[in-house]
Image 1: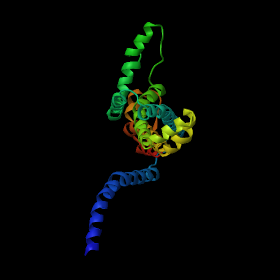
Image 2: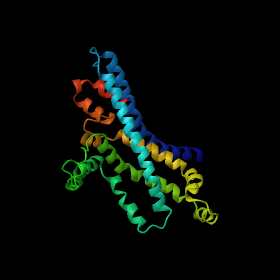
Image 3: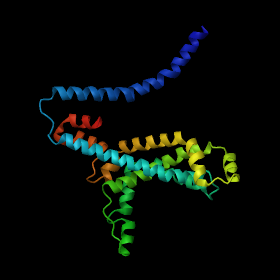
Image 4: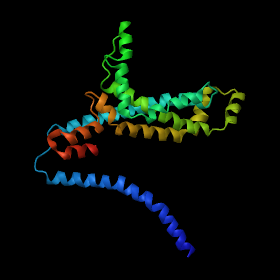
Length: 250
């Protein structure tokens, strides 16, 4: 009887999350795959001749944007996290709380903010023009990269910071008393300890960059990425649902 009760309790604990994963993750992907295959075999009209080259170009743009966002975010977040977490910086908690704002702000709002600041009529652009400095337009890869960095750096910072918190303080004191140079200490002690956090934050930023649709639609300009192409082609291009489905698996 106790075994049956234990089995029922475990089932009640496991079934709800498994149901959610099946309904909102596995089932939509399976439906998309089946729909794409059926559309490919049942449709009489061929795809446009330029489509596959366009798909390769869009995939390349997406990978370039995601890679740049990941590399730059980690390069900035690592020293910033070390400064805010492992040092006695004044008002470090205040700065950490401020950095949560981009995490809760929708990406398209961040895109509009960047346009308002760095666009051709933006506040900062107009100030620079008074000093004879003229910037190029913000739309395209520069604007997308700036917007995604604003959103992704806080994510990387908090994940890396969680790893830095787990390093005991006495290791810092021991390394300092032995005269170990800071660069060597970070390379040989800190980085191996937070290596999993770097991998997790890098993967998360890469996936967030690929899945972002608000930024590309607002500030992407002529720089096409997979997320925006899926949306626009699903709505308009030749009214052919195969194109959006193929982009989804691109």
